[in-house]
Image (cartoon, rainbow, N blue to C red; front, side):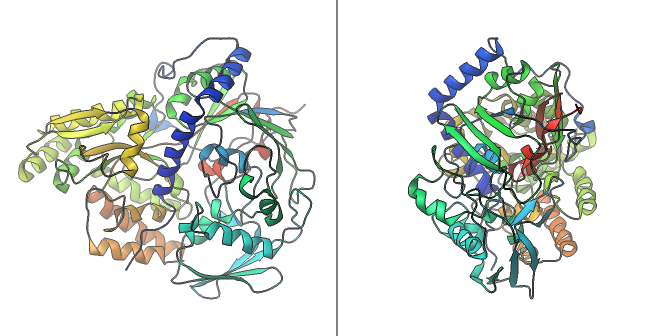
Amino acid sequence: MTRTHRTTGTEHRRRRAADARSRNRRAAGAALTATALLAAAGCAGADTSALGGKPADAAKLKLSPTTAPARGQLDRADWLLEDEPDSLDLDTQGTSAGRVVLTNVCERLYQLRPDMSVKPFLAEKARTPDSRTLVLTVRDGVTFHDGSKLTAADVLWSLQRHADPDMEQADEFGNVMKMERTGPRDITVRFKRPDALFTKALAGDAGIVWNPRQVKAAGKEFGTPGQGDACSGPYRLKSWKSGDSIGIEAYEGYWGKQPLTRRVDFRWASDSALVNALKTGAADGAYAESPNTAAALRTTKGLKQYYGPSTASLVLIPTARGGLKDPAIRRALSLALDRKGIANSGYGGLVQPWAAPVGAGAWGYEKQHFAAAQRKLASVAPVSPTADDIAEARKLVKEAGAPGDPVVIGTDSSQGRTVVANATRAALQRIGVKAQIKTVPPAQFEEFYSDPGARADIDALVGDWYISKSDPMGFYDNGLSDSSNNWVGFKDATYDRLVGRALGTLDDKRRARLATDIQRRFVAAAVWIPVAQVPTALVLSDKLTGPPASQAYLYYPWAAQLGPRKAG
């Protein structure tokens, strides 16, 4: 019997919902911060829906995991977040804003590299004596920011904290049978069954090594303003002024290479305030969570943009309510959907029409194999539908019988989702299926993901999704018969069996072959309907360079490589 795998899209939909709630709770504080940024910028407002004139050519959008190396040091950088973190304890509040800060401060047992590959890190070595055993050798010579030595006992304590059922990462440890010290620097993890994704989880938040003494001393206040960071990374937490800013500074006792930028000050603003601060030089850079933010800045003088691999995607998530319950109707919709039009009209060409439900950043291994498999999917999820695609779609609808009631498409009023919803309605109407759109406020929209009752009146959700792991198998458990994210009720015993086998296959080449077979089945059944992949967008002063441009920025010390573009 397979299980729904742990930290996949579910994790990141939940966390984006948490980010939205955080944004609402912090409205007053964010407004003050935005006001300060706008005062520094000396301008009024900007409309992020203005996509900077002619859209980019999505087909020619160059994705690179890195930017050019910096050529010197930088005393200080001002960086923008879209939210103030709720907490800097990622075990209790794992939001993106907190992670963008802490990835420079806290280190993990494994490291997600800019090219989305994974390697041992604070675990200097790793070996698998058998398929159900992982032995980690802890790196020697590492100190926490209070100067104390990082030990194997600290690693074991941290893993046990992550595995606590009340913690965010607990489900990463569902397959773990036992964790123990087996040598002065060795930790041995024993599994109930082989687990191909556990080391990838250790490159995420499940692999952070905390200083137990600092965490215990802070108690329930750990991760709040005024508390230390309890980590070992290239930066230490200098300050957190609630409602205003967070500062980090280079840790002089760092065991590795000293960071190029000595201090980074984080402030937060969303939408127009963020765009204006970047346009006027009040901030040096930001990782834009929304493609429309990047699109609004694409032609701005003094800024450069970089686009990198990401696991994120735009998708239509069908439900079993009625109109899209039949897989033939779902396949017909996929054939008729104008993905290129969506990319241009909704996102300024900064998303790419895509035939798989997970972005290319998930290809942390066997990249060529995954790329070839992705290209083969174009016949069922075309970039722009041809006359033959439409004819085939109409044939599928005729044979299946068009639904009697309109297909209801759930969305909010954001520009991108509105364009996707309209394009979906147009595609359905073009192939003889009635459709209508249900628009709800953003806060209510988030409830669609977590509350079956909230989506009781819709047939498809205009969704966005990303996974933390650089492995497609971190996504495809969403199609399991018992998955809470399988809203349409797809059931296939062969699919379930293949997912279970892939999750237990440690050999990358063999797992990649299984993963692409699973992907083909998922897309053919249109369990979810892929629309586009969403690259990471780094917006940066043209005087600076160095940080990664890929989704690794959420887990990799990006600020340490930030510096001047020119020496001197």
